[in-house]
Figure 1 (cartoon, rainbow, N blue to C red):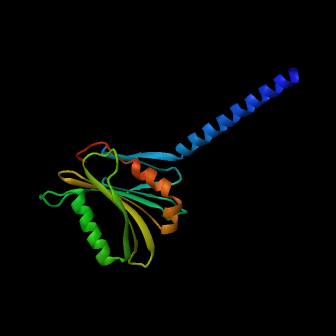
Figure 2 (spheres, helix red, strand yellow):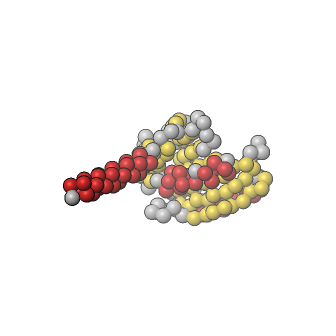
Length: 182
């Protein structure tokens, strides 16, 4: 009877340990990301902790990995025209330019980021750049009355495919903190 009770207690302890290890692993996977918040509090997004942030002025941030080809760039630009613009118009112009200038260009996916209000949309495309390198890019536009935010996440096709969950997490973590981007 005592031996049986010890076995049951040992089994419960082992199960408890396994649950603790699985919980710690899940937390470690989530903590493998760092939040970038724009110094002007306009936007934020998460990126893998192994990557390095390099601000290129107040309106551009680049996130790179020293040993990988995954790249993230976020750019906020003041709109040049006073005419109304929307993410749909920017995506249409991007599609036309992509097909006219890039070899083997293909649109793989298009949509809107759930939970992000306003004029916004994204496109995932594959193309051969001017240097002859095949790339896959996810490009997100967020358009306000006088500014445009563009998030670009790019990698080689095999890297994009292998890191698609990471790319999606980065993309889906985009938050607009100041809807006017000013």
